[in-house]
Amino acid sequence: GFAGEGDAVYLLGAAGLTGDSSSLAGSEFQDLVMGVVTGQPSIDLDIEVRVQQACRDGIVAGLVRSAHDVSDGGLAVALVESAVIGGMGVRVDAIASGRWDAVLFGEAQSRIVVTVSSDHAQEFESVATKAGAPVFRLGTTGGDRIVISDLLDVSLSEASDSWQNGFEAATRG
Image (cartoon, rainbow, N blue to C red; front, side, top):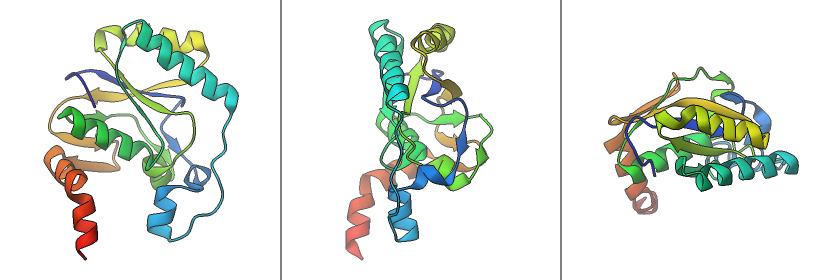
């Protein structure tokens, strides 16, 4: 989960906050909302190696305060889980482009949400660049809300309740 108020939040493995339909292939969103699972996510092994190297180098250098893969459920789920576990909100100020569902719930491969102290943000960007990994600053940790661009705005307490009681609520019906 998020480790510190005011930390810089990055999306390692992406050069922007974009979404296209290919990232929904085989995703949890496709299964739950569309009722069908078709296609499969594509993976670029070269990018995967670079992203993992950048994350590892950031950890070894003592820069990375938290890291969460963007896999099951996509970026929104990774951010909500990190916020709930860390007990603090997040504000993504970046402007999203493309399909909103793909931005929030797309499961494009080789992406990791990483937080670093804002004092070390430029140093982390240099580490990612040296590894050849795309990196994009999303926003900042803190507060009591989870805000993702103009796409999602929910209180941390509401997200926490849903996250902790979701299975029970889903099986009651």
